[in-house]
Structures are given as C-alpha cells and as structure tokens.
Amino acid sequence: MEWFNVFGIFFMVMIMIPNIVYALKCKDGFENNWNNKIVETIEQIGRFGCFGFMIINIPGTWFGWWSDEAFALYLIVNVLLIICYCGIWIICFRKNTVFKALALSIIPSVIFLFSGVMSRSVLLIISSILFAPAHITISYKNVRK
Image (cartoon, rainbow, N blue to C red; front, side):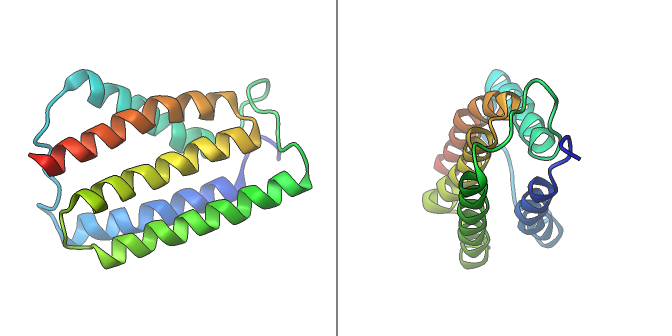
C-alpha cells in the first residue's frame, strides 16, 4: 500500500493526542486574539494539507524514501521530535508563554517539512511551506497580545 503511510498516521495521532487532551481539559484554553483572515486561511489550507499528505501518498507527487537509511532517519527524527513535542505539552500544559507557543508551533512544522523532504512528497512539502510560517506567526501573535 504505497498510497497509505502507516507511520504518518501514527505520527499524526501522536501529535493530536495532547491537543485533544488540552481541548477537553481547558475548554476556554485557546482564544484567537490576532485576527488576520488571510494568514488564518493559509494556515488552515496548510494544516489540512499536512494532515492529509502525512497519511496519503498521491502517486506522481510522492516519490518515496531515497534509501533504507533515509527511511530510518525519517522514523528516528520524527519520533524524537514527537517526544519533545509531547514533553513540552506536559511541562507547559497550563502556561501561556512565548516558549510554549513557539515550540508547539515550530516542532510540528519541522515534522511536516522534514517528512515531506525525506519521503519526497511534493504536496506535503508545499503544504508545510504554507502551514509553518502562518502557524508560527499566529501562535506568536496570540501569546504576545
């Protein structure tokens, strides 16, 4: 099943777990104080693209890993980044700091971009390029308000 990335869905689930827990525990936890519809739209397009293309490999836009070593590096780096991401969520759960906002927006951005480059997924790379600057900017602007 070359079109389906089992590891990608695992990584997406691991990224989403702390977000879901936070949403359930802190119902009023996130308020978007910085309203920029253009940046928000770009972020959402990139977000859904990243979510989808981490899991689904569209033939002709996905070229697979260069080698077994590249695939191993993809797994190792993503697992380490997800451990850092979940660790920061745990440590900073109720804090609203610039560090938390930037770390929790930069790490998934790196995961998406790195995954796109390592798997040679053109659509994941494009989605992550849209998502990363918009998500990081929105996160930063909201904590600085």
